[in-house]
Length: 482
Image (tube, rainbow, N blue to C red; front, side, top):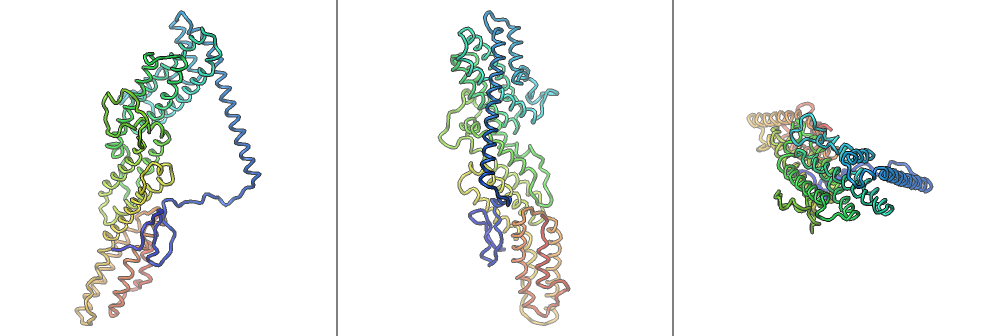
């Protein structure tokens, strides 16, 4: 069956061929950027001035924190002077880390405990909180060491190097603990959050204190980066092969509405892009999904192409494929197509309204628009073609008793099929009002003209009360819930 329009190149739905006009069903459409209010130039200047003051206050606060850490450093340096006193150094290191709120790294065994951590397991949210606090602490430490280095005497520089090495070793335990977490979507986010701070801060410290490639901290940092890369590649493989299929409950909505997993996974994909630099470097050389030790020994260099950012398109395609597969469980004719139409539209809208669109190939949106057109056609064929077919084969306009009975029976069968279909579909959900209007309009354009023509061709057939063409059109406009 034909439907009255098509999705346009800008993501809208063009129904001009039917002679009507309606708002475009554009995934890009949404509330206006303006809230109807206006502001003067003076108001804008005032806001800009307040923002500058806020930035200045924030910078001053950061400098005050660095100065405070440097003062603490000077008080702790004697513990790291020769001769070495292990107990004093351990106590001083714990106090140094505590000043950054990071003394818990000395006991990161409770971070996740791998896949069988028992009672020591932390929640996903707590792991994320600790990783964020760790990154902030590492950055503050690196600034404190770098800014104080030039102001110390030679003996103090040596002691500060010992403190820096001990601090670096302790902070690296977090990287190892994250890499050892059980494979999960949240682990990949944690790996990406840790990778860039390690890759940026540790080379700075190595140059500052002349740690060569064979220095224990340099060796440990390279091993940590390699472990993070390997862990990220394994998570990528699991995302593509099993996580999307099984990580989120796949109870199918019986009204054809957008599955909750779409919001979950599209939000997750956006979270991946908050660390797009890590994603680029960590997964750049992983396109062949190799987990060999030789590849994991060193972090990859900058790739020539899109690198790990191509993962976004892959994962969205995986989500779409699983939705298509799971939709087979919706057996009522046409419901599977409505489900896929709703979910495809939701995916496209969430993509074009976020940074995700920047990492997808040209024509990506257009391909989905064509799919949505196909879902509408499939819905019409599955739901309404059998209904309309009840009016086919009207024959000649003879008025014999047998012919009248056949036509009456045919019309009765049409009414029955129509009511059965409408009764079921009134409860189906199409959340987007424009898509809902398109479906209603398409149904009316395919059913009402056939019904009108049948009644015109057979005026001898008695039309039941409430079954005029106009009433039929109104009846079909009640399809679907929002």
